Image (tube, rainbow over all chains, first blue to last red; front, side):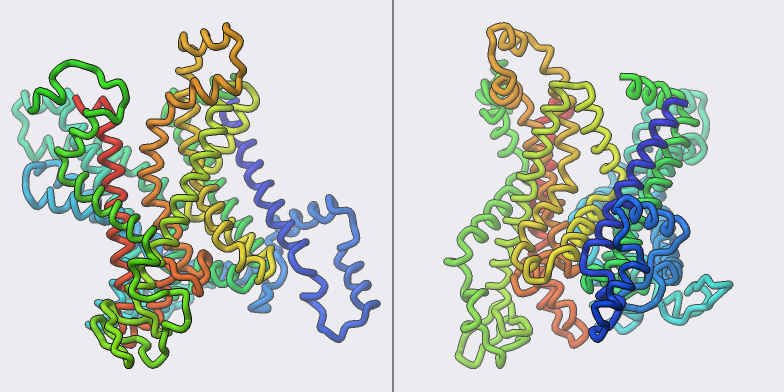
Length: 327
Length: 312
């Protein structure tokens, strides 16, 4: 319980800090009144507006009001788009989620088999080549992978589109590109770009885990029992390899989310990442403020969930956590 | 195996003595990546001498020579080895100056991150208690966010908060601070755990008993003993910091595009790949990969060479 409470406290602290920075941006960068009324507004009008918005109230009261509105999803109007910020974020969210999920499916779908294969065929030159490639993959910045893919498959070969989502279908407010041919074609290059780094990571992790398991006693005993090699490798060893690998895959989702900002910029993918880069470039304060709170909230919730899950699975974590909070 | 270097059973007095040099000579990857890294750093330092043209001087750029492919000849008979950019700037020169910016930003941000991280790690490990709890809590929280996201948000928030002119002027220091802020945690954690074991050692107790001040114990007794691992982390982080700078500059939130950095050069070139002018983004991109790969491989080798567990 002590562990849970300290984790919960940490989560609330993160949210509080994010909300505070976001509030400070919102309130003190530029003049909110200037941004809302035209040049022609008289001094009296401005003062009235100021009163109406509550900008003369004590700072603490204003912060309280900001948090209250944020909880209800009200972040004001975007300077650049003239639309409510919450609506903009909700419109862009499906594109980012779809891209991230497809990228992760590619990365795990290829990464785990390749990792297992390279572990089982350690001496072969193909395994060596794959490992070297994965090393280079780490040094390749994501945006360059995207540019090279665009250059080859869009500019030179002309096979795949280089920007946008293609045709999207709207299902109850959720837009998806997975149901149209152009939508799927548009998804291929961005999702590969986003997936490459995760692919190399998952591959090397799966390889290391597999090698570790193959050395363990129960595998040795299984061999001594005369079980078939395939049964040992794919039945016993693989299943035990998957546990830590799947955990890491889950934890990597936050990273994928962050890197989608880069991929979305390269491919002009209309998701949250592109939106936020434009918000930074155009000093769209309400949008940036809302994004800060949203990101902090997402990460805080994911991390809390992971920690709780860990503590639930592994009692040692609980004990360690309590020891730390007691110290 | 050479008998003079290793098998005499003597423990080298310093870690950079013969053993590490011996390992260096024996590893082709280390030699190649080390030489490439040093060559690139040398090229960046000597940019003014090496670069065929001055990338900052508008007089050397000629718009008529814009977007020429590699190996072209300009109207005044200049040879552009790697072609020119949209302003008629020589790509090779721009890349060498870009390399300089990328390395300066990368090295300074790692230096700043290491300084802050080591300082906080020393304080947390030596004093413990509330201070330790506070610093390590902040580190825990920060570690749960991707580094690039933190750098992006710090840069984004300052960009929004400052006026355009102020930000333009402060872009490089802000970028360095943003990258440093996203990398200090690893140093703090490592140094703290090392200090926890060091502070109980006899030499620290002896220093305390003889009345040496706490600042002195930390700075000249404990610090030298925790610097080895810090150096290794710094080398590995350097590649990451360079990539972070390039990524942010590519996104248009790092170095302004008026100043060449490897990332901002790729950004400029990105607009022209559809007209087939691939070299404008491909050349600085390739240089970036070579730089990050060689620094990375060298860092990996250094970590393995200094890790006694792997040497056995």
